[in-house]
Image 1: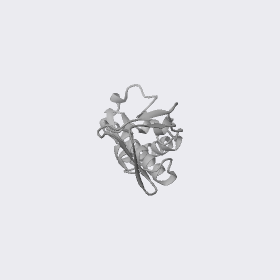
Image 2: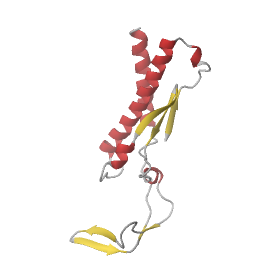
Image 3: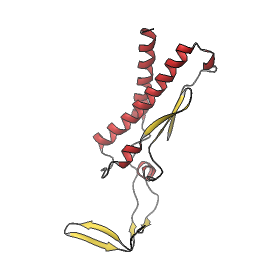
Image 4: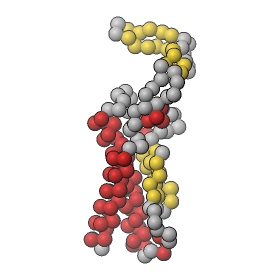
Length: 151
């Protein structure tokens, strides 16, 4: 999760309503740009191979205050985004959740195991990247500039 917010403004509530609304729109545009940047990065750079696309579908932003948004990259059911981002420190055991065995695809079919020891995952940064933050800032600036120019 990342939080995008305006810094350096003490009393935004003292601004005229039209300007406050413009800033709210601009912060939302920054959240949208961050989400879009993450999705584009994963599709282009492929830090991992998405098999289902579910993790990318969980990436979204939402307003938490008048002038800030949160961008999240995991849902209640999907918890592996952080492992892709930061890696795992040690090997870990994978066991079946619902069945008696794991069904593992191989070249000629499948093998079945009651558990496997995964060697661990190296970090594959994809969410907390400077490029995403820069695109969010650009979207914010562009929205403010256009709003001021168009009155």
